[in-house]
Length: 402
Ligand SMILES: Cc1ncc(C[n+]2csc(CCOP(=O)(O)OP(=O)(O)O)c2C)c(N)n1
Ligand SMILES: [Mg+2]
Image: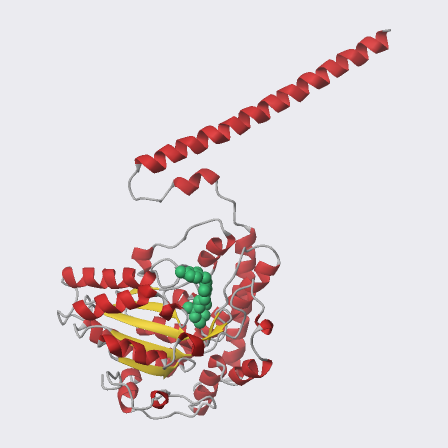
């Protein structure tokens, strides 16, 4: 893993950005990462292309659904598809992935259909996939909070004897994701400390999408983010996050090393958040159109298409087919969300703990009492108005008789 460095260059700006495919689709050789992606076939890469098109279609539809009032909020991952599809597919089935809130490509690569994400953003569920079955932690909105959890999980794997046995089918590692802004959170530093001390099988993966809402990465860190973990003795690498091949190669190397007992590593994937932070944000208030245009030219989907074209691995028919499938997926999302029923409010007390907890049960009972009071009041009000109208009817009848 010599591509993962432990030393900081004399000039911080000399930190290399590793790329296997340039924005124009040209393939750049890199001995170590080339070896890590050598087993990928044209079919694999077409699949990643399709995945990126699908996830972008779902993302755009989710933004529209929010605008139509069907979602409370949506955090778009537009522009980050290569970072997520590459990382998601580089993980092996048994690895445990610990995402933030913007990891729709990671979810897709793990087989989580986009509509299973939407109920959370609609505000009607806490999560609707099984983290154990899909080996993917629920989305985390508290910045950095997932990082010590991921390291704790990795330390558990060590204690369960699932690291470094030499069995690639059972040895397991953890991939935890967090943003450039989140890298300033104390919990990320704490995660680094525990992972380094215990050599826990954790790969830390930052999508440096240049922004933490309206704060640019340059304010978060005086040095490239990749250099930060080296102070903990955690080797790191800075890669082009819009290059699905580079992402796949780096994550595959790092997870394999972690699984084999070589300890943690850190990857900074340089990418761009092409859309607003969330549907509540207006990026025209803080960033220039020219910057957005510069990054549009580095679009990860166009880049993979151009590369596949140079390899004669993609044609118009396949591209058109992916677009149709993306459209169908968007329609499916539209129908799924309109079919979602509101849950009974009492369900908020379910799934807080695995087993019944006296405090939660007391709160549930209190809520039931509170609600039944309303129902009684409603009944009384109904009864009251029924009595009033009966009285009014009889008065009218009386008057009619007079
Ligand atoms: C502990 C905490 N502090 C603040 C916030 C509010 N907040 C939500 S997203 C965000 C910016 C995060 O930026 P970054 O980590 O770069 O991730 P990105 O949104 O760019 O994917 C902030 C400050 C939060 N969710 N949690
Ligand atoms: Mg960011």
